[in-house]
Image (cartoon, rainbow, N blue to C red):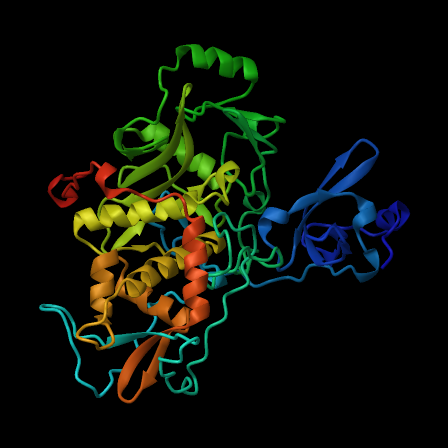
Length: 487
């Protein structure tokens, strides 16, 4: 494929909305020409620059390109589209989270909970006051001594679901031995068409953020004040997250900022890891600044400045200079849908180090103290889906492998029991068992077949999972927000 010349571009008016192949380097550093949409055009002395979104690629790969990277021979002009019906002038319904996802990513799976398997004819065991759910016999195949009987092959229509192709870089999956891809491919965000959105919000507006000792390249748009978006670097105080326009302003601010940790109560500390609980009503400015920072790395979010209904749990690493933010999750004070996480993020410098699973594990430890089962707010982002699937898989396999035979019989467990032990909602337990392809129907009973590959893969994954939450170090008293008026 031959790129165009400047003369060719001057002869054709390339406008916003045009589509054409654009040269980019792939993960193997090889040239490829994916189809891209022109989102914006700007002129600098001597030439034009084009901001492109690669169709079916994750938005974090969007970039400014020079004219020589455009293939003008396959230029497609934009088509006129019918206006999307709106309600009260706004598309869709109101999100409930200050940084909630408003467009469903296809990689997040269906919006409704997965259906449970049909009830077997065999006698079932259920816990008191709980809905009767199938018992599962747990069978570990021991190929060496041949002691285990292999159940019948899967019935038609019960094939294993393939993992979605999620765009981006996985923040936490350290291996693929538990059935989770080690990293999603960079070739598709699998998101709904957002052509109705404001074109401004589809473009990265911050070049670089300096946060403590790290410089971060934002992935997505974040509504920081417009006068700051033209600066080469946006400076943040790493303790209060206040944004400043220059290094001199930051240095002056640090002489007056007394914070050396996030505001709020420290509810967990083990080693250098601490968690702070921040009330979105009591610490409104910090919570809003946290949402602005998070929006740089979370796509399909609409930022709301009403943080009152939310709690923020910030994870930090401690050293001699203070408590440095690693990541966070937010949750509604009162959730009618049993959400124990609204948004969750590990900052890029700390990704792929196990912190994402630590955040997820902490959210479920809070649910255990509250005596509830929980689930993350849907839809999940591509990275969130990967991390949650990996966490659910490892947590459930840990339970199953610890089961002991009862009077020489195969160990049995119900979905209710798994859910009560882990605080993982029943729908997530069922979908994880189906995703791992563990459920088989044999002689009127459901059998969970733990193959040797699954067992060995799980053991390898757990050996690499060095960071774990110690419940003994958690000092948390749940509040009944329904009795607290307007929070």
